[in-house]
Image (cartoon, rainbow, N blue to C red; front, side):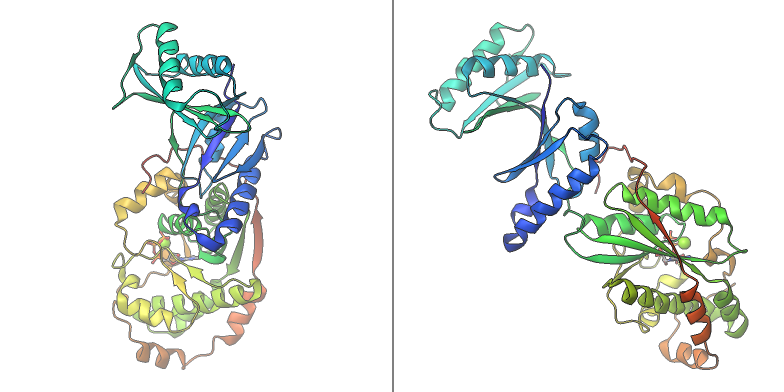
Length: 400
Ligand code: ATP
Ligand code: MG
């Protein structure tokens, strides 16, 4: 005998009234995508939940993949048998004997199919007895059992499930539109991307690259980060913007202590151009209030002036420790700490203005013309598509 199904529960989605159907379809699609390396698996929808039919694939391997799919509340391995008392007994016995680290158990029978001749209460008792008689060393504990054996007798079949494994939670990627993630090589922005995806948002990324000041390895680092993010959703397009000329121009023509703010404003203008071209409705950054000089309220206010696209900042309320913790969980941390330079660390001014007012910045910007350089940068964008070949085989039990 072996587990032949994974039961998928999707809590939050059940609440989402009229969007429910599209959410369920998207989750089904995302699961199928995630399981494409397991071609015999099938995803099946039934009332209020989903099943993955394993058709011979290893249950633990497939479960590991499902742990990367947003929108899943929890999962359980399941055995499907006919609505037959003996078959149910055998399967439950097998499940109990194969459970790890279990001394106490409890049986919970739920009879959905009222045509099944034995009532839930009676079945609880007879099955419990049967299990005790045919095993050694187990006791029943109805209050705090190590294992709850759930037996659900439905019309089409009976499902026997054991432990409940937490899923990633959130909403299926693809149900909340698309965002343009500003992806640097740092720790924060990949985490911001992951959290946007958690709310069902699909991502496309933009990276500002300044060769030869930033190397190919620095660019590769960003592509590797984007590749990691694909394991939680679909493919990710990375728009690599050649930024050298603009950056040199800014740092040559603008007062040094305002250069950082002006550089960010130019980045935003270019992001908006990419958004318009790709029909993307928002921009996401890894900013967290107060972290560095460029992340003060004044600075955000001044940077925001150049676009009226919504800017998502999923990390705004998080402490650095929490951000690092998530980046380790999602396996981006080790990539992020590779020691390659990024465009913002090269041209760091000695004392950037922590309160760059809009008026001042506009006045400085009006002394020079960035239009042509922006056009050139936009024309020079290289789009790299990452399709997701790497797994992030991680545990998410206590994530967030
Ligand atoms: P991170 O760890 O994500 O690099 P950070 O704490 O270093 O963030 P900043 O360098 O101030 O913060 O950057 C703030 C945000 O601006 C980043 O999180 C990222 O979203 C965006 N950003 C910075 N540099 C780049 C870049 N070269 N290309 C694309 N986006 C960038
Ligand atoms: Mg950075």
